[in-house]
Length: 318
Image (tube, rainbow, N blue to C red):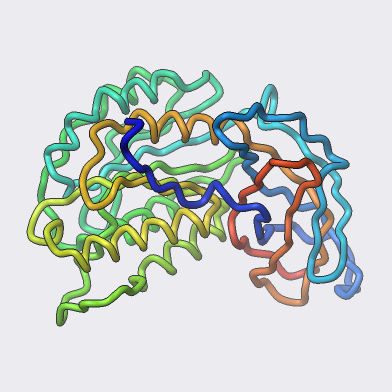
């Protein structure tokens, strides 16, 4: 694997921009109302470096030109380890994905007892649940199967993941998705577009993810049909995957336009990401209406890179 170049998008950002979901305080003066807000942040360092200790006083958060009060910086460990992770496989993926099932099973079985894992298949703009979220990791791993290898009537991985996020019950646990797909949106028919462009459903999926606080990680898995041999469709599919992961604070992994020999390096990196997440709580000013707002998160610890989602919904102040 040393001779292979793996593209990673989403984890290596020096300054992460996050928009945070809040519950407004019981006050009517919206110009001065602040409320505690919690967002998941991933800390990363180069692979040859050791993760240093990051303390609350090392975190700087601003909203525009205003510095916000950091009320909490808690490692996602111990009582705060709770994670709900869905592994989603595109049913339109090529059968060669079957050679990676054992790697996925090993990844699922290695999860801590505080992680609930679900398995689903992307098909017809929905997610067909093979195993609901469970801490029985063996059951989740055994729910994995070969993809059908058919694109389906509505072949859009982005509409499918939207379907899942809208059905996902709210909880205090982190919500994250690992999606294996080629990223091609086959639902939109029309003339062939021979240029780089972002598919509209990517932005729709990003918006729902930000509203629900869901982090989406993606791994490229070639699909069946002519799309896998069409340069523009394949590249635009990877661009869509990369944008979705980047916008939600996740990672996108791919090796050119071919299937990787092994997914293990990708899964190892994802595990490192999950093991180095923090719950950041800041006091944020609420507005008169629900909207997406941003805060900028930075750290004063040298060599540490922070990543978080672009935006979350801020409810209107009451």
